[in-house]
Length: 164
Image 1 (cartoon, one colour):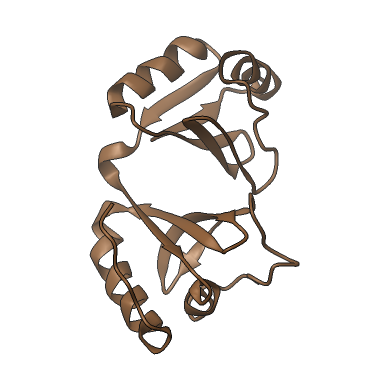
Image 2 (tube, helix red, strand yellow):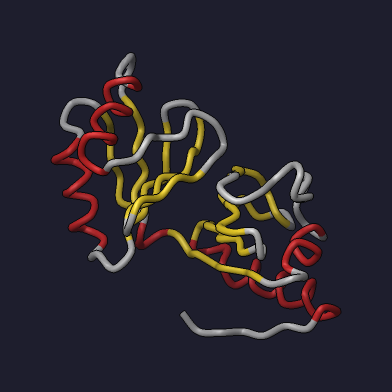
């Protein structure tokens, strides 16, 4: 996981280069896009959270740096972030207890992303599929507190915890 921030007046160049190298179009609004093992989630104008599955974190950071020399600042976020995935028929209901945005399928569906707070914890999250399944990314130091809130909020719906 790495933060990618386009340098001044280079956002279009970053977008073009990411398309060339990774085969995907960077989102210009709160969305998440993925191709194969690589995903980028919008984090603000000219700023994305880049993720790669099954790749050593520093190798992915170096891959991004090689792809975007002089175009973007790249900062490894793998050691400082926690990712929690929640899914199932009642996932939306459980998250709605702490999310301040509308999670109704007409307003927030697969591919949508948000940078907001959930239960007073700053998170970057997105919906992966219609089930719905969400991934929530937060600073690692907030992971345990967020987890406690999530389990408590989900209790009325039944909770099944699976290791990742």
